[in-house]
Image 1 (spheres, rainbow, N blue to C red):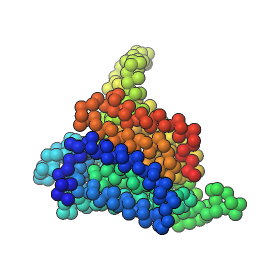
Image 2: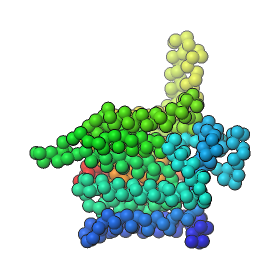
Image 3: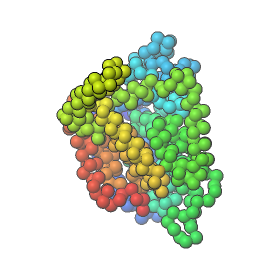
Image 4: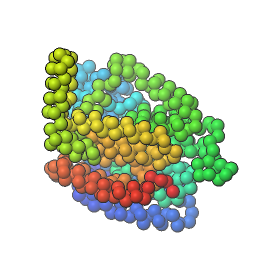
Length: 446
């Protein structure tokens, strides 16, 4: 145990990647063995998931420092201060400063995390051994996610062996039990919400594949769980329209989900007079290894799009005689921001398309996958939002990405330029396998 406490994954990154690669390579064999094995496969899946995560709990979070920020935001909230208003560098928070504050990333930016996440941070911040306490909390949520994924597999008539694409995935175990990322709270709530949506489906008298929807109690539970996921991380907000339509009772689903969200978020918004500034900063400034963003903004830059738009704006000002009203647009006319605007349109189109999804499992996989592709920032742990659905669907491109995405850790550690080498290493296998997945309609859960 003492050795694990000082084992720095960042300093042994090549060894970590080799071990993770071997574990990834064994997953298809393990899935086949589990499918034909006797006994209780669900119990074996959960036991394997637990055993994979336990050795990672004592590891220091050296691949990512996000957990330090979680605990700081929790400390601020526990002290009765507003982490949405005050950045860690704010003088109002100087009494809370200590060694944790010294190690914080992005000390000039207030928190970007939703209220449920901050409440969970504050619980861990109050406990002995806060980092270990937090990792135990999110690992418990991760095991709950595995249990709900097994339930979804049963509801869909799929073999339990498919679940190990998430439950035994080295990336998932490393990012949750090892690095303690908060995303799993939202992932677990989203899986539970979809499981409750599927609980409303009963076989139709004609034996149809979809079955008929009956009035049922799980709709309100699904709405509450969707709100919980949104309040842990904002990604499920994009799925609310789709899930509400699939619930058969959209008014009830949205009433529960939006009322709970409003109760949690209105105090934050009212205390600030608008959107939290940290969230705005994240949306405008954050960029890392975006699959479409990285090549797109460079293409816009090479095409001279920003100067061309500035010239069109100059011409419009001369024509209209409005010489100052539109000057606020000039600072946004740069390739990275223009690429984000285009990708935001792609994300909105994905949300609109999701309204026609009939299957909440396949629809959730397609939607979260599209949102990830449209994001300017994709860290390895962001894949937690797609991997549960990809595991059920045996989606080759996303499952391969869960292995190759770990290569993005090489950039800051080895001084390898993120573009194009890390981008190609992490996203190359995904884009190579994507045509095969599209041809086989990989998101059609069967």
